[in-house]
Length: 80
View 1 (spheres, one colour):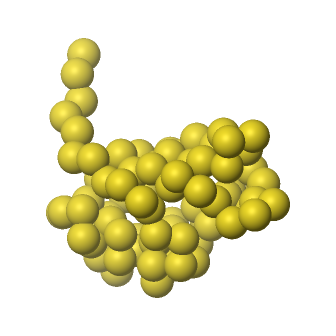
View 2 (spheres, rainbow, N blue to C red):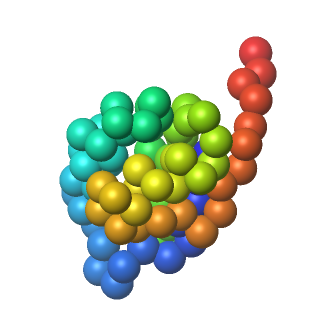
């Protein structure tokens, strides 16, 4: 799970949706799967759920796809 603490000024949910589409187009090159995202437009934050070999590879996809690198990446395990 990654967190973007401060999206660019004026960024909207639609802007994040476009960035997510760019991730989807790039992720196959690195064995990454950006599964979903959430946006708090008012606070200017975004959260991405991703399966990746490691945090660095997940960040690389964001950087190459659109340049919006997450501020924090947390390796989490799924519960039931």
